[in-house]
Image 1 (cartoon, rainbow, N blue to C red):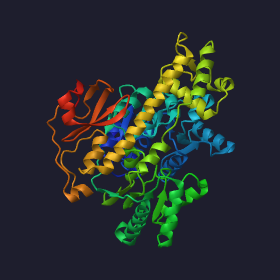
Image 2 (cartoon, rainbow, N blue to C red; image 1 turned 90 degrees about the vertical axis):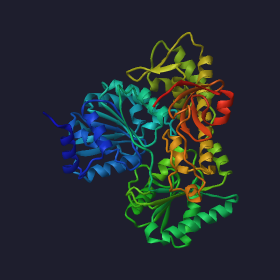
Image 3 (cartoon, one colour; image 1 turned 90 degrees about the horizontal axis):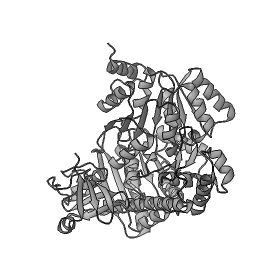
Image 4 (tube, one colour; image 1 turned 45 degrees about the vertical axis):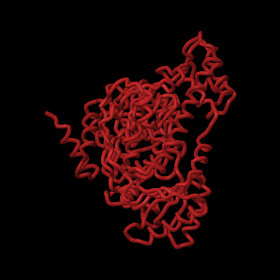
Length: 549
């Protein structure tokens, strides 16, 4: 009788050189080789890529990996090339026509097992048609939180993936992410059309990371403190290498220049640099030719360097989701690492500005009118001929109309107006409501970032609670625990984490975290809210809809 566990472990060791697979990896791999759809939520550095790389060699047909960033694709391809696995290739905008032809040929001839594509590539009918001819064996969605409107890095092109999966005959699907609380997980399953998905969810806790916040009232003082801290950390051989995240390209260049003048081996990294220069910084950091990278959020996905001893933030990011993902680059070897946020309340005003955007009402009107007037489904390319709007605005309009239920994508990738009796103006209004709900959610995430920075309780309790994970005892490894202001959390309240609740004004929500005096609830329509428990009880503000584990 076949032993899938033994086969998986043998491939992992002999092909990839991994002598030991973690229990979560094996659990997910066994589900994959049995033909199940799988949703995997594992922390950064926990080996998510192995979950598709190993089973792919036991499944007939090529493995398609949807990955959002070219740098992330390149990192994963290089990791596969360092093993004895079959080849991995990519088809993307950075490749020339000849390279793309060679990549398709390698997959068609069976010389390449793994084909990396961006979600934008899968919006092209000819690409999906080619994949259908290949007979895809496994379909992998990396950074799967991008498919969810609740996810912190929502990517509209990810909404196309569900119909693509069906057009390919629904091969087994593996959805991978490092950050997905329960509402995001539910959204991923629904939008990708996962069937009876096996879910592997690991703890979000990284106990080796010491969490701290340095509060400042003056920007110049804060900047000086950041430089002093980085200089002190790099001067100690035990904490020599790390990352400094900034809110803007200008700040990345500023801090890199300031640190270089103090003798730190440092480089800036941001999307305004040439791709060649970004690759050089990436390689220099991995090979220890520089000790510190000062970066915007453009740097980090796919970074697998075990000895990063600190991750500092010169300003608050826009959400705890982004923050968690970025600090997860530290201490991957399990050894202690320092995590510090340099916080000034005014910095969050910048984040509110950077993350605000108005719905594309003109494009919505054009798209809704054009689709309503069609006799049947149309290809996206045909819609482009009818709508005089830039591609990005047109795509956003289509996705908002889809989320509002006014437009749908057929199994062959065409767009169709759902209800001919629905006035296009009403469809636009519904799509604008969807966009405004997204905006409220984004603003609520910023307020949760403020809550983390300003709490006097255990920061790890707050951070884990945001993701729906309860930690009753203070962690003992954050600045507030060091100061003695953290408390044990009671677990005998009426509202447990993941409980579904209803508010008279805000509607349905899910309890994400509980503290002794407050609840954090993620509401469908207004995003995250922190409610005083006393006020909830005294005024009967929440009805318990359905208790969950």
